[in-house]
Length: 234
Image (tube, rainbow, N blue to C red):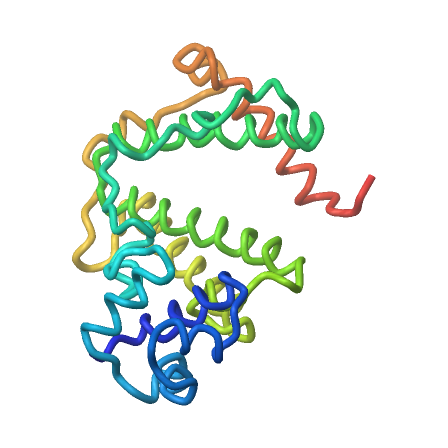
């Protein structure tokens, strides 16, 4: 069973479980050498071992094959994705007031951004903006994740040596595509904005249309420009 994701996830699960190859191989009923070959991608395993390994690590076969990011094998629909604050109340100020303040500024601003994108009527613009933001969050999460040397690097597919430059290049590509669409000069195969009038904005219209989130967006703009012009710590 050839699958490039399988060897990476097999290794990650064993390290997360905190067991050696010797222990895992014994529990899985194979030799340590064979498990090592599976983890390195040198040998292909059969369906029987896949099921046995999935049971041993308490995950689904689809997860082990990289077919879903959910360990139970569930594919999330829009209705199943929880809201950002569903797990707790923001007024607990976990991590301090700065954490909660910045989280709110960013989350509230994204509400406006994606509402505008939806009304503009360009699926390609939504896709490019979304991919840009996702890669940005990926970069910051990977940086924070790497701050603890005990964390297993196998969670990521891209090696650390290329992850940042590749991600930065991808962000530039998504920026270029989104910029071209925004200027009504989309790349070949990409659609134009169907409702450009929906993107007409002013500080007044933003605060009037989005009474709950408008102030957050305007504050984010101000804070971001200060950070750009004066990146040194005050």
